[in-house]
Image (cartoon, rainbow, N blue to C red; front, side, top):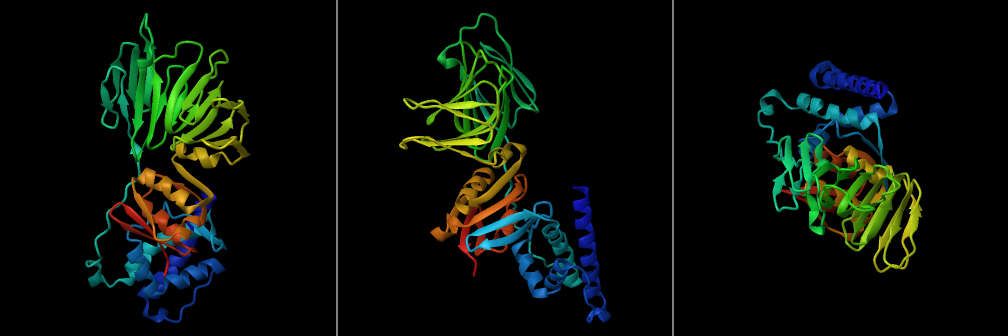
Length: 386
């Protein structure tokens, strides 16, 4: 990683030094840049005032930390984005070179920066079984007493603490953690199980697990790192079937009440739904079931693509643009409009920082494709590039 960043810095310095001389030295008009082929292409493009002005208008808030994709055309509908130092170098150079290109008296007239579309954040609403509602975005570290025991809230999220004596658990003893659009949160259950909750998710959970199983109810998406207890299986109940666990790490997505996707990272889980036979998953496998189909579909997948969100990353691999935009819209709280249906089938790949401004990510997707993104307030309009 250090070598990569040194390479970025060296490339940026070579090209920047050339461009500084080109724009600031009168005798430099015949000056030629010497470097590798990629650097020469970058220098040539950034030497053109019309190109710089165009990119400045399109990328007033271009973020070098987010612009790290090297794009490669696969075919008319498949574009691969790969991490590279070159795109990061371009991002660093863009602002520098524009400042050299604009005359000093003109710099004060640079148009104002567009409103930044901010990413999501850690926020949730906790609805206790006694009817109390807590906004966890505003809540500070606190200790909340309930009839079943104690809940602690700290910088790590919600932690279910000690149990009250002589508690009689009922169906109404379940608390509810609601993650709004543009949010995520972390929960530690009373058995030590860690749960990461994605945007637009609800989890119903008891303060203490009673009986011969540990059951929670999920709508949306969550990653579970379950504390092993062979005598007391962990069960995730959803509208599209249940996932039974002994101790493992896995992701469950059920945003659509008719469809469930379970992705197993490690350990073992099984899927149970009505009269269908129980299906056991092994690490690296994903089960998809849509109500109405005869049988669930199980296949091998790169689990990182489905679990990286809890580590603050978006990971896409040859994924349709329509699916990518659903993920981005949910996190950035956006609305998306496609001008034509065929744009939805453009396939993209890449690993992107989910805590970046969304504009540079969309700018990267435009490179090497026939796609153009226009943003009006919180609406992203996907058009064909002219």
